[in-house]
View: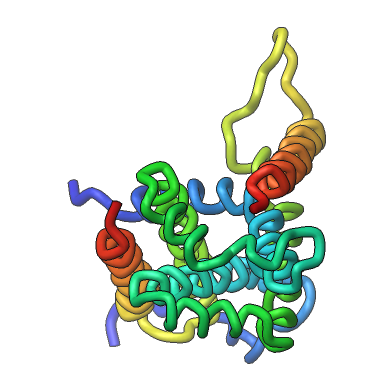
Length: 132
Length: 118
């Protein structure tokens, strides 16, 4: 053996399931909801490309209790994503200076959340307008 | 100096994260809950004919491609970083699994939209 061998504190197993890391793990888990939802849409797109019969199978799956429960989980994950996303945003972006003053982080978070709520309402209104 | 590929994945992660933060909850509510149950929306909202014409429209194609691909890249980055922190496997192996899956699904999305045609 040559060279220094730094001491590595042994990590607890399942450290990510314990506080204070659990909040981090849950935040990262929202990525599963985001990608999982996209995967459901992709399956729908593939069935759409395969024809009406395949598409109706997918549509019937969406009506099943399994799918509704899954989408309820996706919705919870998405809302958690929105909340954490705009809480992280001011920490990852350059300092925002307006009128010679640094905009406080909680203001940036509040503005982001306000935009998200506005987008939510606009998309629902567009869906309402697109009704057959 | 060897350039890192991380900024590319980081950009896709950020774009997908912002898109999901602005559209995700509404989209899940519409396509996953309201349209299938017919609560608040017509049960024919996502009928084959309607969704097919949406996916045939170039603008509709762009929306579908952007949503599906960027959401997947966002999730892939988060899953990769978390698995890396959990020491679930070698760094390179995890990168190949996560980014490889996201890349393959992006190609599948593009192919499906191409097959659907205009």
